[in-house]
Image (cartoon, rainbow, N blue to C red; front, side, top):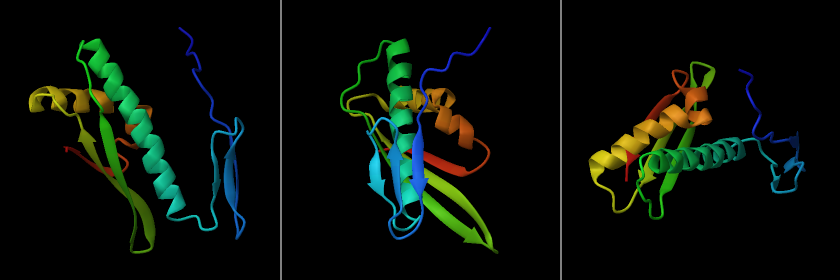
Length: 130
């Protein structure tokens, strides 16, 4: 079976005082005069969007209706003994759901979301139900 590419995000990023990132489709156009905290904020926004999609997919598979799901992401850039790494906290809001059902969706979303898969075992991630 051949994998099917569903979407390709294309961006061009420049550095310096006039640094910026722009997507080929024009949807993203942001100034980046400093690489940080922009990189961590962009990563948090991208991961949150992907993770929300994964939660919605998991809920749909289980025929669970969602009302205003949300994710607050905190991405830390850490320096320890000269080595840089990331760590993350995701606070998930699933109003109106039983805590056990919400936790099931949170766990399922990490198994679905490509960003969660990419960082699994590579960075510390704490996910909580808000």
